[in-house]
Image (cartoon, rainbow, N blue to C red; front, side, top):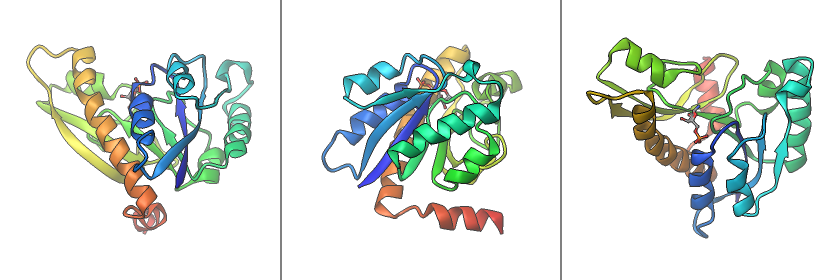
Length: 200
Ligand code: GRF
């Protein structure tokens, strides 16, 4: 059974989908803890499913590195096999990424490498594209630049605004995330091999 820690910053709707998937007995992964960099509304989902939470408030630390060190201590206490960034809106410091790589993955509301960064949905709309997408990637030292594990196109419809487009992308992100975590758990995705292939 693959053990998973999830890091969030916001509503945690993707977290909730993973919690629901992981509560089905056949699903080969279990969420062991949910962490956040702020008082995230998504903690309520973890609590509902009886999953422990931990808060490492970014603003209480003098630097990203100090914050990352404490986050690393909290994460390590749960000894997860995999760390999932699910709407965690902070860049992790390099040594934390190094510590978990390649067992750390992220979801992104765009078809990477198109529209990386914090405003993937807004940037796609601003660019006037007719389709964008959702991606699940391995986290590396760049911004949304790691190897792509799964991705799918989502159309941009006339009249879409950032909220409506994001709400259409999120169900795709959830489906991809649930599938990728399952495939990592079953060995169908080999993260080490994926990362090695990307670095060669
Ligand atoms: C997702 O689209 C994620 O990729 C993005 O923020 C959203 C998280 O939403 N970075 P939620 O917190 O899971 O509802």
